[in-house]
Length: 341
Ligand code: 5GP
Ligand code: MN
Image (tube, rainbow, N blue to C red):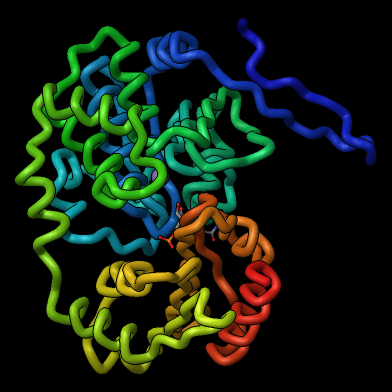
């Protein structure tokens, strides 16, 4: 099966790209046939995004390829992620040189890459997407999108196994971190048999579970603990107690000297509350409001996030709003009331 993408005419006569999945063997064939790569994940990179970028970069280097692992210009990458093998070679998109092949991991559309990385992808003569977010179309030359896959890094791991290259300790550590973080330490709905089976393979290949767990989960800053406490203090129950919403103001962040990373755990404070179906945290930045949703009962929060122009997974999704915190709060409360009624 060579044809990966079928071009079809939409009702308006516009070209629309339909999604066809690439086989692992086709992906490896393409990886062998090019020499010069950029690998990039999504804006606001998380453990899976960086783990997948670095895991894929280790594989490409082992295949003798030239590779620039990049991240969206202006992104902050948290300290634990910067301790991963190969993280010191990460390049901001604004400093990267165009490459003939651009691989997008843990994201699919140009809209999730940031402007500089999106430009680099447009300049590439061959593009590949490896992702686990649900999408209906993909405009890369070759795509593998598995919404049921626990992490994008599991897809990278499958490519490693298919490649015939011996999986290294570094590839294993990076892919393990993507899987460990996207499954919430193997606790979420996506912590399925595949997650445990692939984690076992990664550990067998040298991923150090105790060391990586300590680096990611016993390494909180004081500001982050304070942000968690503020999130608990601000929590407000809505929808007859079925949902909880809280917020972090820009002023609070400044007062506490907190960074974006220090706010990452805030949503987990709310998610942990007994009896809650949906949790939402709003983070006020100087120019926008970032929102995070988590669902505990099968509510599709990706659909609610999509109504605000965002997206993600059924149980974990995010969005950006450009009004005031008050407006964002009232929009989210209305959307949750409609979704949970
Ligand atoms: P978080 O709440 O941790 O920022 O994001 C939860 C999930 O939703 C992650 O998988 C993330 O990639 C995805 N996500 C967050 N914000 C957005 C967004 O604005 N658009 C889309 N498509 N996905 C998002
Ligand atoms: Mn992911």
